[in-house]
Image (cartoon, rainbow over all chains, first blue to last red; front, side, top):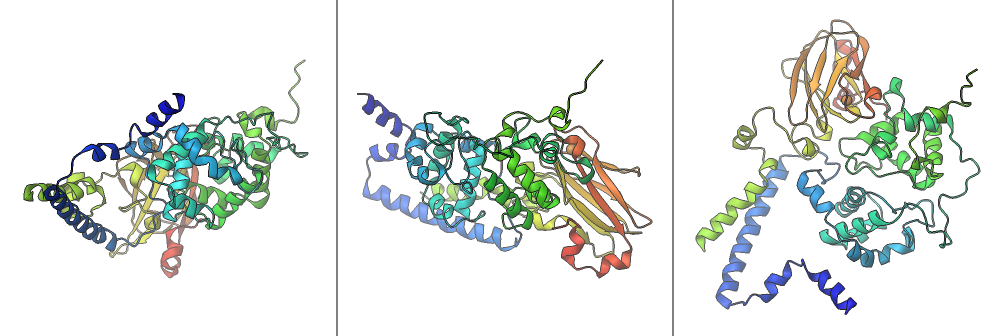
Amino acid sequence: MWRDNQVRDFHKDDPLDSLRSCSWQPGMAIATTTVVLLAVIAGTSLLNRVNAGSSHRVPSNVAWTPETIAQASSGKAFRGLLLAKRCEHCHGAEGFSPVGSTPNLAGLDKLAVWKQLEDFRDGKRSSPVMEPIAQSLSQRDLADVAAYYAELPVYADPQDNRVFPEPNAQASHSPIASRLVAFGEGSRGIPPCQACHGPVGYKPGAPSLATQNADYVLAQLDAFGDGSRANDINEPMRTIAALLSDSERQALATYYGAGLGLQPGGASDIAPKPLKLP
Amino acid sequence: MIVFTVLILCVIPATRYYQIDQPLMRWLRGPNRVDPAELHLSGEFVENNLGTEIDPDGSVTVRMIAQQYLFVPHCVLVPAGVPVHLRITSADAAHTFALIGTHYAVKALPGTITEAQLQFANPGEYTAACAEFCGAGHFEMRSELKVVPREQFQALDSVKRGGCVAR
Ligand SMILES: [Cu+2]
């Protein structure tokens, strides 16, 4: 009985259902085919004309219009859970990946996961592993998977063998990283990381970094810095990563990899000792 | 059936009207209207159109996007002694592109292209700061504007003219 309900719920909003139930007649089929063919021909010729004049580079086909945001956040976590079975091998059963170079997905914002999958699908972000996987998913699948990972808790289950954050001997509020995360560096025009990546503020599509793997953060900063990853809309990350030195990138990766980003950074992280008042 | 076909043929362009760079559509959108969410898809603020460009009359046009919490391009190069047409828009909140030490301050608003005429007599370097509170990273929202001698600017290739961001 329980199973039955779940399955029915699962198909509830399938748009094909209405088509299946309608009775088809030969005349109607021919007429519809003609119309669809004409529409496709007209549509493609129009699109070709639009694309012919523009040789510009588009970083990502995603644009955060209200419709896109609604579509990206309309996923069903239950369906996403079933789809995400095939993600487990690399990204972990709880969304915490066993390998440092693979991102943790637990608790990531729906829009962030959705956008990256969409970009992998369009080839805007390259990965030999993720591109074919994303291409095998439908538009609806992307939203469902994103909804599932958004619902996973940020703290790993203590019953699980994998522990996160990884015990790190160097895990401390290094002055370089704390300053960049909390205040950025105004003299060089580097905004604070936490203004867009949380927990202070978020921009649509900007992932939370609080529980990300250090190796992954470092690899992405390097990729943005040399332009090998270029799917950020209006170039914010390419600009910032290019402004960061190697040691700053390393410090930021260590900071986030140790889970320090769970709390907002502030002046108390930078001052070595609290001021003692008489 | 014919009516239906014609209807569909009309609906397809209507849903994609913002991608069509035709005079009628431009007129419908108005001269200085852009969709802040779709700057990177089409129109004059696409990635490789940002930065400085030489106009036929010898003046230059600078296109910039202000966004939380950056100006893109992050370093702009312009020639000295030449009119500079700045065209700036915002991808999110209201910002102001203010050149410290000058009286130039240009507001950048989402959905609107702001036009401003600047001119720099001598070569020099300016800090451009956001002069309008725009969110948590506002106080670090700064970029550079470098004024170089005219001959030096014209000797550069089109990519280098675009901006002076180290990459
Ligand atoms: Cu601003």
